[in-house]
Amino acid sequence: MLTSTKNPLVKQLRSLGETAKDRKEHGLFLVEGTHALTEAIATAYPLSIVCCTEKWIVSNPELYACIEASVEEIDRLEIVSEEVIQAIATTKNPDGAIAAAWLPSQETAKIQTLGLALETVQDPGNIGAIVRSAVAVGIDGILVSSDSVDLTNPKIIRATAGQWFRCAMQTSTHLAADIRQLQEQGIKVIATLANAQKTYWDYDFTQPTLILLGNEGNGLSSELIELADEAVAIPQSDRVESLNVAVCASLLLYEAKRQRR
Image 1 (cartoon, rainbow, N blue to C red):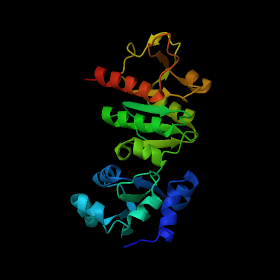
Image 2: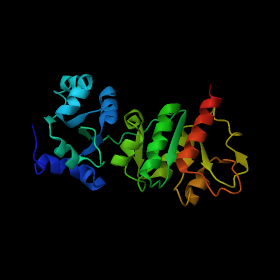
Image 3: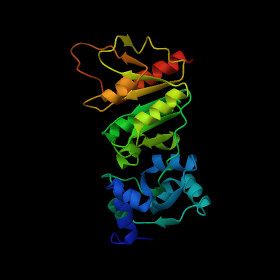
Image 4: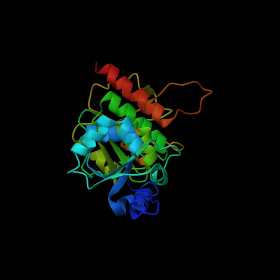
């Protein structure tokens, strides 16, 4: 059993929860907690390191058996003390299991029927909530601008409730160019604007569509607004200045799902 919080492995894993630079340097990101680890195993996502406590093994025998069965694909499986888990975790009350997974490849998200493009979204909780809605609706994928929060931020992984592993996501260094390419393939692009004349109820979501959502404070850039084929608004009371970007995403995605029933 690994009990020393000064072990190099502890230092390495702890760094994965700190900065995107550290994650890129190691080629790994943190998967914290039973729920996220369950989804990683269920989707056969490649793991490098798994650490868990004896207490956690007793409470999760079936999941631990799955991990042991995959041990040939995992570089390192360690039983550790509660203190070691606490030293690695980014949360105050870790539940006894933490893993390091390989960073995702930068393959293009294949959007053919319905997708999202997020521009400069900074709150990891927002992206996490958007991912959960995206998986629930069953969209093709999400494009995320490179100036948004890093997709492997531990807060995003937690906020998705494990659904991160079931969503095709791509960090785009040239979001406008990627959007134009999708337009050339016949995908209609809609911008979400508060002053748009058409509401999202009036848009035909049965056609292949990419929904653009912008920064929490500033919305979409003028470049993406001009690029869009259409703009839609979400009706709301005059007393409300704006809706949360994750709420907007859910409303639009579920309207698309309703129309496609």
